[in-house]
Amino acid sequence: MGYYHYLRDAWKKPEAVYKDKARKWVHEAVTKKIDKPTRIDRARSLGYKAKQGFIVVRTRIGKGGRKRPSIRKGRKPKKSGRFFTTEQSAQAIAEKRVARVFPNLEVLNSYYVGESGKYKFYEVILVDPNHPVIKSDAKINWIVGQRRRAFRGLTSAGKKARTKPSHSGL
Image 1 (cartoon, helix red, strand yellow):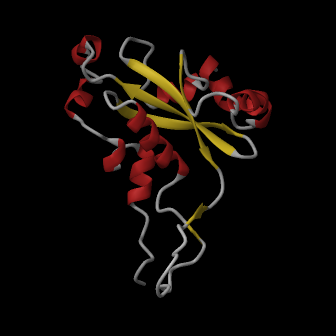
Image 2 (cartoon, one colour):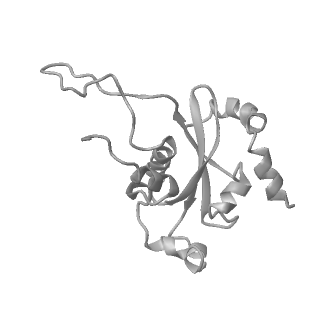
């Protein structure tokens, strides 16, 4: 069994791995560019390569439900409850937020790295489509023609959000 197999097993019981790190991550910026992935086995399985043009960003997103903005005047509609469930997962929302911070990069994929009591942490793999190393690599240069993948639901988390049935009119 190889190194990545043991890493994957360690992340099956992640509390021991990330609890101390999560306490430090809370005090960092919301989106932080990092040198190398925290979960190298997961990053490699999602397409990460340790070469120029690949960037990894750790981001955090708040846990819990989302509040609807309250209506101040007028007749209240039937659906004006206080809380509502978002159509997308926290991971898909995290990918979109990172894509807004780094508009010149494309989101390849993302993965879960941990959580604290207040936040969930994800690492997002970004690719620079204008980098010459990316353009010359036959396995990844398909991303050169892609634009705004996270907003069109083309990442794995976005595809899961697209396939959910809508319960709005049923």
